[in-house]
Image (cartoon, rainbow, N blue to C red; front, side, top):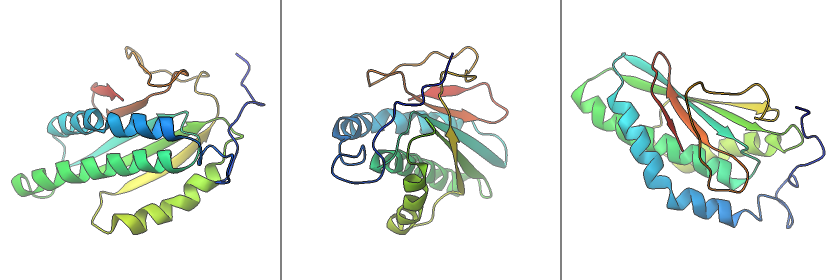
Length: 172
């Protein structure tokens, strides 16, 4: 399948950019945050290793505040989960790896410049996390065997929560 190269959102954060015109997607994130938190809580209870890694993929992330909102929601849920567990089982930690995927023409630079702002806003202890950008179509060479996905937007898009060394996968 030929990768779409001419189709992309407007970059930056100007008046006509995706960042300024993505209220519908923001509403979907806010209305489904309880589902995301529940999925993370359920996955946290499955952890048995002293140090675990959660891998989160945001497919079709684009740029702007919604990507940061999603990252912030995941970090907050992991922090809540590990804070509760920490009192029960000292020494366990969860590291979070974020893979942000979208077409190469989208403004990943805006997302990465905004990460520092996200850290300043959190103002509290957070789990260790790492963010990587994967610029290419998610229709090409990407699949999770045995996993079905759903979407809140007209284009197929989902986030996958997955623990290393585990067959458990939750999609949001």
